[in-house]
Length: 112
Length: 112
Image 1 (cartoon, chains in turn red, blue):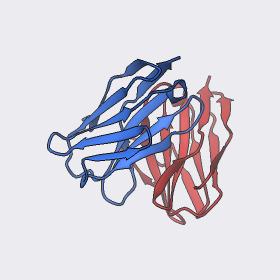
Image 2: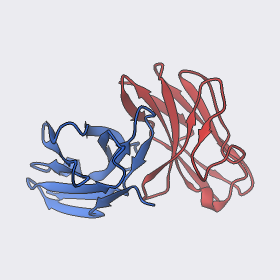
Image 3: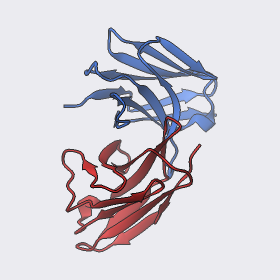
Image 4: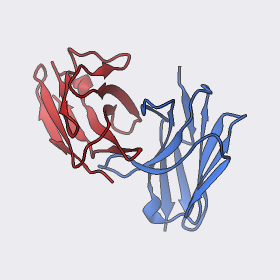
């Protein structure tokens, strides 16, 4: 099974700044996704990270706020821009490998 | 519109007991029904999954029961153990997009 590593695991940021989260998979994956999970809550899909092209965003999420890159089959980044306290959440990267969807351990963001 | 309703929100079971978590959905286009287990500070991990062409799937102590006509599926954990204490999410997937819609989660506590 694939292992997904996320950096940073947690961070505290000031309002108005941006945070970029890196997602590295130890093997090639066909599809990669970014989810958001507010503490104690369920997971919500932010976008599908497409290799070499613009990400596909779900309703309520826009590229200006959540720019995503995926330069190859094992790496993706999610940037959360112009941070506000409402962005405090856990951001999870996931990928599909051998038909199964795997998740990273998440990046916990706190915005002051 | 909430596409999947999960219950109960929390569940406390004695060691050795049976834990039952239920999910109901509306859209009959969903064709893959996984359950994920999440421990604190970790990402969700696939526990067991079922497709609608079968009514039950068992893997060890974990069983999914699927009722296509009622649009409901449930997770049964037999001989529950304290190590099973975690949050459980049901999820839905439509087609090959591999994008999951998650239930609200059930926090299971198994008392020793």
